[in-house]
Amino acid sequence: MNIIVQISRFLVGGLFIFSGLIKINDPVGTAIKLEEYFEVFAADFAPFFAYLVPAALFFSVLLSVLEVVLGVAVLLNYRMRITAWILLGLIVFFTFLTFYSAYFNKVTDCGCFGDAIKLTPWQSFIKDIILLVLILLLFLYRDRVEPFLDQGRADITIGVVALVNIAGAIIAIQHLPYIDFRAYKVGANIPQLMQPSAQLKYKYIMTKDGKEEEFMDYPSDGGYEFKEMVLLNPEAQPKITDYSVWNPEGDFTEQTFEGDKFIIIMYDAQKADTESLDEIKRLSSKLPEHIDPIILTASGETIFESFRHEHQLALPYYFADATVLKTIIRSNPGLVLMQDGVVLAKWHHNDVPEAKAIEQLINRDIASSN
Image (cartoon, rainbow, N blue to C red; front, top):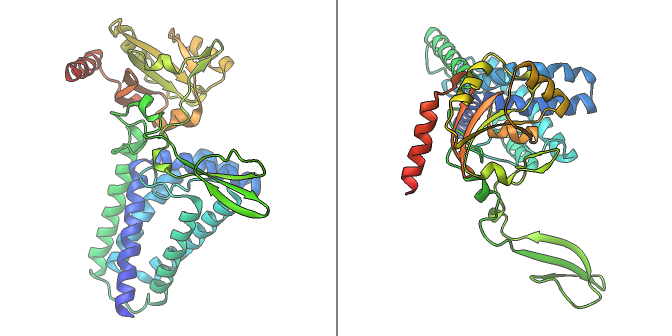
């Protein structure tokens, strides 16, 4: 049994550290997911959950750091009486959360591992059931383990781990994620990612006379009743399916893939950080003529028109889905440089580049393609 407990300790500790570090890499992304949960709970359980939405970023950092700290604590057998209780409470809560999401199809991605590893709701629930069993073992044997470090050194280690991860989360919030796991990362060719990587293949499940049959081609014979169409190669599906840009005149998605584009993303103008707007406007005015500065926003036309006039943003603007814009960049406003639909660079509003740096990026990409 001791070997099983030790294996459980390493699995639980390692998984909690990995999960926490993935979230610390992108606290804003985790906050977006928490907002989704709070809104669902507000509608399904109690309205007070809606008041937690503005604090989603705080809870994101708290949860992420707590996961790493608990993971390290388990590996060090640190204060296991307290650690085991906290672990058990968290995993019971998460198991309920993932079951509720899966059974009622409320949140289709739990965000357990951020954008690094996507799990379906039922996969998340199964993962939590396995963790629950492992943590129950640690809980039952919590009084029989010896700490690896003396109390003083262990306290210092846990304190340092907490402080380092809090600092890491703050840096990621004030700039951009250290590693971008999303489809819109630097180097991504958006038009290509909007196309399937291979021809999609399907099988058709039909019924006739109470019997179920499968066909690779849709049957032309009469008498069959369609039941289901199953995709056989889901890995070939487009990685990007929801990128769309428009204005009252029509669709402008393809135009954003033409030439050099300096895109200012402002998914919520009312919540946008405005301190950097003057710097962004100066940069836009210094760009060469072949680089087109445009704004993408999810705010309504009336709201954005008012915002644009208030801040003298004399740039063409278009609309896009808020979730898509938040996926492209974790900054409001955020800056994206694209050439023929390829993402060349992204900047947080705290890191507005010089016009010369943008020209160098464009010229370097042109030189590399020749």
